[in-house]
Amino acid sequence: QVQLVESGGGLVQPGGSLRLSCAASGSIFRIYGMGWYRQAPGRQREVVAIIARGGSTNYAESVKGRFTISRDNALNTVYLQMNSLEPEDAAVYFCNAGVQSTPVANIRGYWGQGTQVTVSS
Image 1 (cartoon, one colour):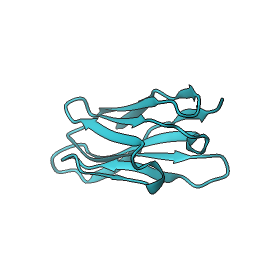
Image 2: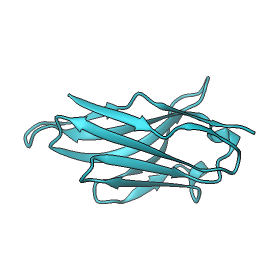
Image 3: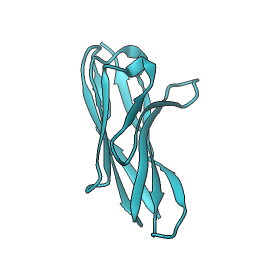
Image 4: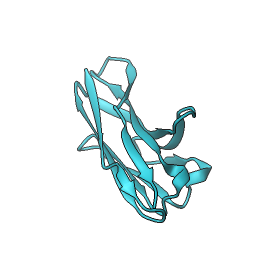
């Protein structure tokens, strides 16, 4: 089994910054793509940013230039630096990882439990 644990959420004023972290643990041989998603009340979960094992990234248009995703493969951790936060960024943020548990296992997707980000003055 694999566990993903997010941290770093909280309350921030508009224009402020937060840094989210997501650490994977458990039966891990290799982690492939990792990403951050968010879900606001009454809305579907949407992708925020994704990062490949080699470091290539993709962002939702709404966060380009404000958010930066990064990862540390040695620590099995993915980060999301969020700057210039807007009220529209408020949501529960989830991390996702594609994990291969053994050299011959299939890649399986795992989700964290989510961390709340609130943007309000």
